[in-house]
Image (cartoon, rainbow, N blue to C red; front, side, top):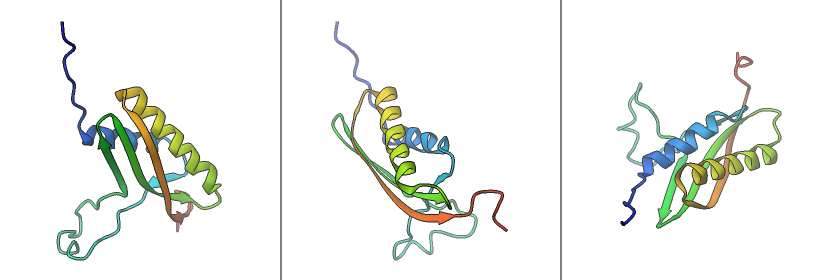
Length: 116
């Protein structure tokens, strides 16, 4: 008896990565940069795209993400924590192999509750 083929959509991989990053204190996914021609589509109140991209080639996955990190946090340590957590969760939940998790710290911000 043949094993049925299961397809995992890119949106599921994005959701796994985003949910994983929500659990890392002191970080948030940065907003994606606006490209020429997108200003008209991004009207007030519209949800702005996030700096999170998943590329899949067969059973291999690459994740590119941009983070905003709270001021005072160790950027290297928090980036490594994000890489490890995203890799582990995608591999555990899907069985796919994560080739790379590329992190770009795009901004430093005041911790929530201190902004005024």
